[in-house]
Image (cartoon, rainbow, N blue to C red):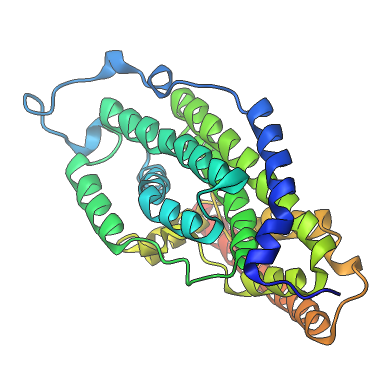
Length: 304
């Protein structure tokens, strides 16, 4: 199959990007962040300082909401990465700016909700934002193929994480807001998923290798958040986002959509990469089962 440089590939994929941009613009619903915030509940912090018992969210819901918001806060870094990777001209550039504009609403609405409802400690949240944004986000100088593969998985993972956080809060207002944010993430995922489908026709072996690399090295963009590992474990224990969800609801559906394990005409490296993915997913599935058993045992012990 023809070998493509990064520039060649982006040029070949641009008509697909343009078509999917048009599709996205036809489906994306306009929404206003201010309409998802219960402003009447707001009180001035200079007259009533924040106290933990003011939050309607459980401790774990606070952590999940905070992680979701701080992840969204790093938008300037994400914009820099995709603008550098895809360029700022033509359909690619239009998509980069449109995506950034849509993503910008997420942090606005989420932070306004938390401040109005006093859902989290505002001082701790702001300090966390400063740490996160100064840490930034490094795209590891991914090739365009790897970048598109990564964001396919990442957008879907973020959609599910936001949606599950909303449900976990048991607050209808928070759930409505995060469902709206998740709907944006889903459309973003579809854009990138469709580009990978096209890339598999243009440069199949290279695309399979890129998908495989991103599966086995995947990390959520919030890993730079202060104390992320502990918070991620809390989120996992609550079933908001864990290995089982990542395996069953993120990686597996995308691989099925791309017919990843049925593709033919691969070179030896791509075949090996695909074998590596199968072995990796088997290992993740095994770990997920162990964590599920451990969680079930802990719940049973707590009830007893």
